[in-house]
Length: 134
Image 1 (cartoon, rainbow, N blue to C red):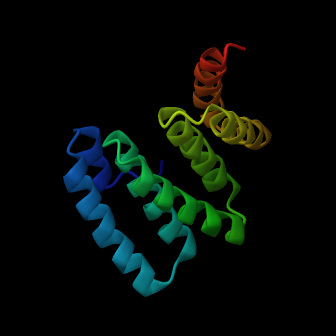
Image 2 (image 1 turned 90 degrees about the horizontal axis):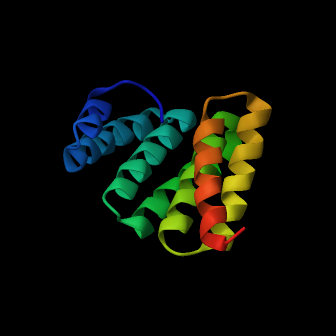
């Protein structure tokens, strides 16, 4: 989602466990500092990697925790990314109505913000609607 860092490099290389280890270390430092936006970003990034590893319950926990912080600090871009990630989790865990709801919220927010996430949301929404037969 955010920041070109060492963990992001590991993620790009498909070395997900190594990426999680580095994100966890980064998260611990951010928690010590007390920077809520950075904490939420780390939680979200860990959740995204857990999605790749198909560890959906852990991914969902991380993403929901990030979303709670994004809501609290009114970080709308983070909120949009987290809603899209929750839609993806719901889609992959056969919860089409929940996936549809999260994806529509992410798409609407992304459009309002004018961020590139719009395309990803539209693609996911098409998959969800196809699965629902809409």
